[in-house]
Amino acid sequence: MSEKIDVHVPVLIVGGGGAGLTSSILLSRLGVPSLLVTRYPGTTNLPRGHILNQHSMEILTDMGVTPEIRAKGAPPENMRGVAWYSGLAGGGPEDAHGRLLGFVEAWGGGYTDPDYIAASPEAIANLSLLRTEPMLKAHAESYAEATVRFNHELVGLEQDADGVTSTILDRGTGETYTVRSSYLLGADAGRTVGELAGIKVTMHERIRKLVSLYLSMDLSQYLPGDDSILTWVFNPEYPEHLDFGAVLVPQGPERWDRHSEEWLLAVSRPDLDASQPELMLQWASEALGIPDLDPEIISVSEWHLERFLIDDFRAGRVFMVGDAAHRVPPSGGLGLNSAIQDVYNLCWKLAAVLAGRAGDGLLDTYTVERRPVNLNNIETSTKSVGGQMTMASSLGVSPSKSAEENWAELRKFWDDDVPGAAERRHEFNEWLGESTLEYHQHNVDFGYTYDSAAVVGDGSPAPVSPDEIRLYQPSTRPGHPLPHAWVERSGKRLALRELIHGGHFALIAGEKGQAWVEAAEKIAQEREIPLRAARVGLGKNVDYIDIRLAWQRNRAISPEGAILVRPDGYIAFRSIEAADDALSTLTAVFNQVLATPGQED
Image 1 (tube, rainbow, N blue to C red):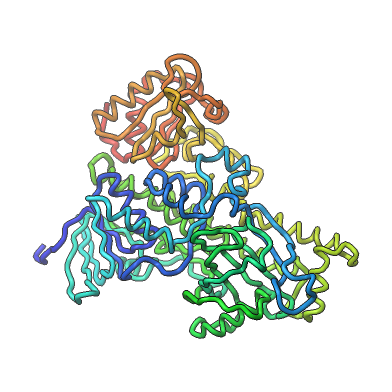
Image 2: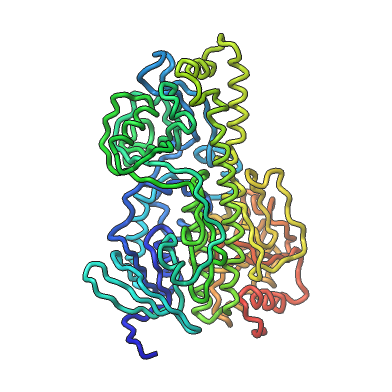
């Protein structure tokens, strides 16, 4: 190649948001050098992407970031659920202001729901990218393997059979330089990489326009509750706002109850115009029912609920992650979580291929595994948005009714003497039950499965859940996430999934599965595969004690059996019983999973 190359690096990451920074950290922890460039001068100034579900928190724990997120995020008691209130002040009957209309537990009810506790060692977190991106940036910059350059923009991209040549513009100096990488990760929300790489779009649909106002204000005198992640407000005084209401999200940074110092406020009207912040504030005041609302406006942003999905997450040596590959309506909080889980799936595979432990075919499984998951996320979130469209009618309010008529409908929620009160409350209770599609989507958040060449099926039937969206059922069937169990060794308790931390495979055998352990360790040593092997159960000569019998409840293997867990926590192989030749069996398993069919024991 005659063109001068200024930088050589195994992986170039384009984009410095949640997906890009997470990629940088994961690759560094796997020993893979990378360069991250982003056209923006700094991290986001908008409080978006605030829900971090259990699976994402497990990943962030593996990355070493969780303690800071827990320290700065909402305490569990301030994120039990989602609440609906009548207009908070202003016109209408004085006894009707700030009345609780309904409440539903959300995302595990502040880690009190037994299903969520049993599923994972991690509770959800509530902290927006406004706070988490600077943390991620600092972590990324702390690794010797990583170079992070903000205010640097990708302006050209060419790839060949051996790598990718990218042209980068230093927006500060106006100079360009060339980067040669083995692979490129597009984490730029589809702004540049997709077009340059010739990515085809399957789906792009805008559903609704909203405006979010990031405000500093004191709402403590208006809000009676302290335990809501989201607060919906419906103010009958201004019927034109009643088809959507207003949504309040506390932003801390010190308090996360009704005394939160900062708030995100979302409103929706057909004539929204974010270029007129004072008008937006007027509409926000009307939607909340606080006529003298006078906050500090930190920022105003206009955005769309949208559905977006590309055909293939891989284009040669270019891989698309996060919003560059898919965009999900925000209902359910799946956008940022999908991005984090994309790169957790991809980065261990890149590291294995770059180290020569795996063949290129392993990288093809990224699209095969992640695209169906993200399509399901889009479909689930779209259903949730559809449910939001019927929220007002379930409350009995409508833009077509007068303020007096709408107040009379809401009075049914606290005044038993109003005719039809019990019936109206039950109708909204039914709607709240349906809203668990958004606020209790545990199987979508956590229980999704993979089916690809990197999973060795065992012919067993897939478990059938009574509710494929809401109910997660742990299973060790290949392609499922490793079930959670607390185990102990030498008096120290740890989550079983910690065996995969740092990019390790985990061979987990039954009490009499020493042959599996020895075979796995032999293969790992010969092929330089990062792996931890252990017998887990009860009795003598086990490596980890199943002290609560949580593993026994879900493992579905005999004392002679074993499972192999991939570095992303997904089960690659299961043998319920002993094998005639554990070494040959595992050799074939690793050959399939790592796309190295020519290697023999």
